[in-house]
Image (cartoon, rainbow, N blue to C red; front, top):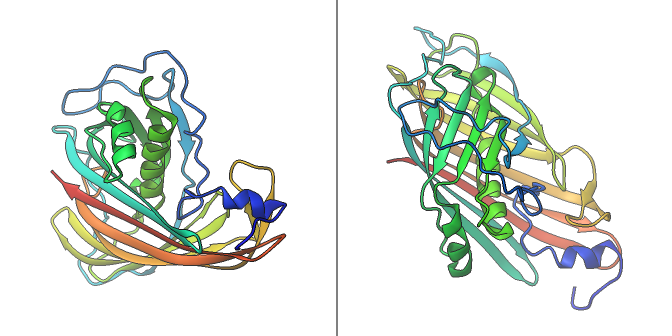
Length: 313
């Protein structure tokens, strides 16, 4: 890779900020509406919704199917509870995406305070207000200042799993800031743990699978184990494996493709869940891997990493 090559390989050389899971982000060119989104919710639960509001980007999250392999010890109960509409949830989300190539290493970290409110009338709707979004990257951090008080929302499906994400970027936010916020949220939600609909006890094991569309479309498998449960607080350990469904890598921003010769992406982590809340109370999931892409010219080797952490405030 010491000299440029024509064709798809050349196009990929310019993709220095490809995210770890090759998610194709629509925020880079969307969200230009001048119309104001819905007013921010301020109460204990959400009285208004970003769903269908002008200026809101809607991003689907592929639903995950789930199967229980071991129901665990007795007693067994559903991993669910009535939604908490008496108080908003305060959580800080931090994501870090890394990529290593022969030309160097890129890293993007975004820290996002979130205030989440479950819909007063619709418990499958969650509205979120962003706090002061920040990054250790000085230039990105300056861009992210415009995202303060931005609105977002998500719809929940079976097992309290998100099935869509909504983002209302402020008019003043740059495409770089919009993309960073979108990347952080969508990657975090794509690694959410779907809960089983069966009654389970401590030690229960279940598997969820979903397909993640992106530059490389992958099949994600999450194996979860219920480590403990105290009242309606559950601690879940997870291991994750992602593998491509085919050998096609679509070079972001172009109509060119490369062939995936090798691909590996695995991870593990632990999350603590309040079964009355929409977001984890705390937790960390770390993914690492790499891929080899071939086309015209030398093979392209990339190391990839992604970490998501939650911390209650």
